[in-house]
Amino acid sequence: MNQLEQRLREALTGEGACLKTMEPMARHTTFRIGGPALWYAAPADEEELRKLLAICRTEKLEPRILGNGSDLLVSDQGCDGLVISMTENFSFGAVEGTRLRAGAGLLLPKAASMALREGLSGLEFASGIPGTVGGAAVMNAGAYGSEMKDVMVSMRVMDRDGRVFVLSGGEMGFGYRRSCVAQMGYIVLEAEFELKNDEPAEIKKRMEELSLRRREKQPLEYPSAGSTFKRPQGHFAGKLIQDAGFRGYRVGDAQVSEKHCGFVINRGGATAAQVMELCRQIQEKILEKDGVQLELEVKLWGRFPEDNEGET
Image 1 (cartoon, rainbow, N blue to C red):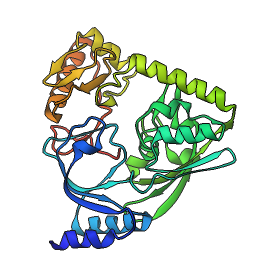
Image 2: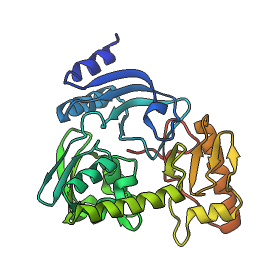
Image 3: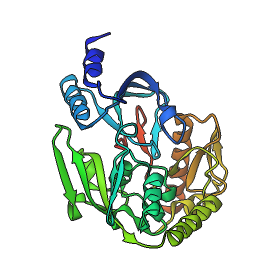
């Protein structure tokens, strides 16, 4: 055991904590693509997270914060640094009155189900989003006309020096698919939602209606990272891609979904290189045809032609 591994293991002593080396990231992304992480850690609590960040500072390791990996593409060669998973031990949830407090690693469908059980409305839109509360806070996740900024009233975050802050209101810096978290280098620890009382039967009905719409319009039967490109101003990415003739277009096992052209899917054996080549061809064609520069919504970890790294 080398000195770095010893330090990491000594920092991870709590129940549920773990450290893995050369962990395949395909196991931890909804794309089911990605080479190995040099180091993969799941801290048991905030204190262990703080210790890991201190080690990263002294060892000059890049900390990569991982939720459910639902908007993430990892290079076929994997990624260096330390991947810190928040899903194993930061997945709590609690309700008090109309407030729902949720750990960063809690999956959004579970948070929505918790709200449903308590007769609280406001998270129905999130019931089908395969991300975590932390990831949703980072990118102001949304669907069907609603976003995190509509219901999230505060978040506890830790900076890379281990200091903890509570952000609320405008301090969270919400915008289209962004918040202040990535810009400031914060790590989301938990978030609080303000919801409204409603009949559980009515909440469930709305959730089922949204679920049906998703199944009809999104390629949920294949691994993907959700919407591949951000919505360009004045356009819809899926419509531009469809009109450019890319419906069903493939590069290896990476394919533009025939059901929804805004999704690139993994038909079973896609590589990160194939996904990136497909995206490159789409971007090149759309820029030539429509004069629109499509920007990836999917975050990239590892070695790619262009960097778009961030928390997910």
